[in-house]
Image (cartoon, rainbow, N blue to C red; front, side, top):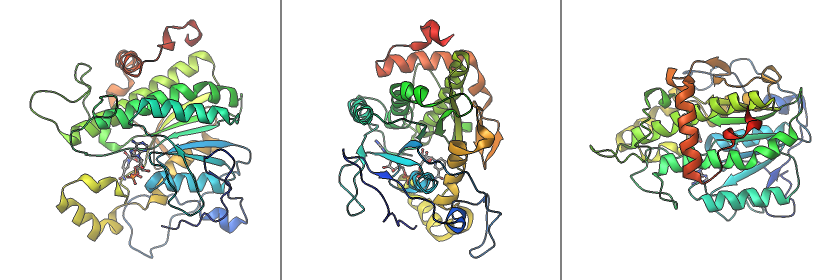
Length: 338
Ligand SMILES: NC(=O)c1ccc[n+]([C@@H]2O[C@H](COP(=O)([O-])OP(=O)(O)OC[C@H]3O[C@@H](n4cnc5c(N)ncnc54)[C@H](O)[C@@H]3O)[C@@H](O)[C@H]2O)c1
């Protein structure tokens, strides 16, 4: 994967903001394809799609150091956005670059990240909740949450809540701010037992089950968020992006045989990270989605998420429980939320 970020601008204050101005139409064309499904190397790519430049707009991408998140950040930056990458480790893996530290496995770290962001006094037009872990062994976050649920779901739940006022202040009628939450087709096999969100059920821990649960919770969250935003008449939308099956290191914890197969044949049936990022980029900037929320997007088209994700009662219950777990006030009780 190309990591040519030589034009990145490093502002005062720590965070790396990529600002890669568009140089030409050709440069814009590398932004994406509408690729989907298997293809042989060298096979012609599907038609390219162009999005309008986004100068002056600011995005936060979680987990933007590698994989789909990195590709998303790169594409948004090339469209002229300032992109702040929220990442879990300090240090710089590209010489001369820094990222704003945010460990989604720590509520304290998330709060500190938001504090630092707010001190910059810049707007926030797009939040891409992308970071994730998959099939990690049973272990807990700093706050005692099962890791998939804590990092993938609760971390983003808290982050979004803390940044919501910035998003609301930055959106305007006709030019909404956007929350893009990256889920997965795995959510279709997810189960959500509100009495066992921590995957401690008798019968043993299933890494796959825990991952699927976290991805299912993210869809419920995004759909509920949209309902609340709409009720409030807020200039912010919330959509889910499903990247498809993408050749990244997310699979580092899966069975070694599966990893071997991925290494041997992944190029054939997996999307590249650039292709995997495309639905997130589409959700973040496409004019076709202006003012449109509550969608589950796959290959840049609306798809149906699992039926229970549309269940208002379950959405409400999960929301309330998540507020308790992250220690934030349940704003939905506020009349402002309708
Ligand atoms: N790769 C796929 O096939 C696939 C399929 C469906 C959904 N997804 C989703 O796409 C998203 C990106 O995954 P990817 O495939 O690029 O994986 P990846 O492993 O390449 O990237 C994951 C990113 O999340 C970050 N991250 C992990 N733990 C973190 C923490 N505690 N705090 C902050 N950041 C943390 C990592 O640093 C990394 O940047 C994930 O949400 C994943 O569930 C991926």
